[in-house]
Length: 168
Length: 290
Image 1 (cartoon, rainbow over the protein chains, first blue to last red):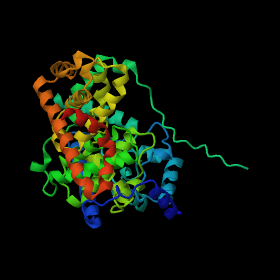
Image 2: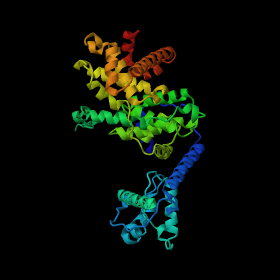
Image 3: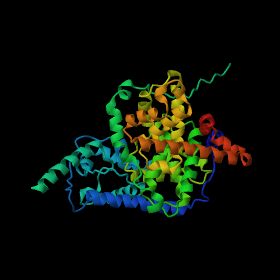
Image 4: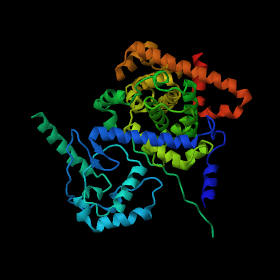
């Protein structure tokens, strides 16, 4: 099926435009560079927000991170799923579990604010961490994966309060 | 029983909104924010080690060909080149990854501007399958991150309607002037020299070049030479001499691209017809020009 789809696609492109401009692509290097750049985004976000987005842990710094209880049940579709190479069947049970037990996941939710995309790898790591340590004492481990708009409002507000406190 | 295929590629477009086009504040806002979306430096000198100006031209030309063949909206190509330049201005990139980057930029620009965007699979085919769609998707994240998800960049296209409305153009020529201006804008996007100019300048210069090339001043004296330049400079608040220089530069890029094409024509006729779309309009412009 894949090949027939490819054939159809091929029919709509002319060969003279299909060309490799700069020789063979080093796929290993490409992957490496990609990971390195994504890693640097995490590092930047970590510095900026003093929050470790990979392990989802607050760090020391200008912002004070607080856990808040989610007021609403967040639909499963809003949870952060691995975007790439993601295996939905692996993540779904966990998502369902969270949905069925909103209070535990909600109480553990850490409001996070970050504009940068988190790559699939850290989120997978975070999930495996969460599932392998189901009874971890720190409830931070079992948190929601997806940033929602309301998260942003909360953190924003707290930042302002925090900075005004700092000024005093 | 007869089978009837009713599938139509119906692309829905919004009508031009007079409230947006006649409101001076819209133009002012565009002018005040356009700088934010320009590449910060001439990256060949300070950022890139592996990438040379001619490679940028190669990748941009290829991107234009893909956009033309796929009949992308006019803004897609300049927007994709804007992403490419902004990324290259901050991330040292390997030569062999440049085409992938170009594909990613088209992928993003197309998603932002089109009802039926280019697919990853299609773009991979255009790279002669030198990249995988998985890689395209991974790098999409990388590019988005580096552009800080700021995709709604101001491009020269955003100014075209605003400028055209201020000119006393004969109604029947409006379409042609718009088409030529768009062609000039695409031409400018293939040339790095224009990447450091504000989009409003490129737009104004392109409209100027289009109106001059079509010799519209025969009918309307306000569209002749210096008067036109002065009028245009007022619309987008540009220094008259800067505008003049920009317009001349655009015209000379056109001439050299036509010459280049002519050189390629005997040896590789298919190559030349690539750019026929792009060149078909200005060819007559040049005929009057020279």
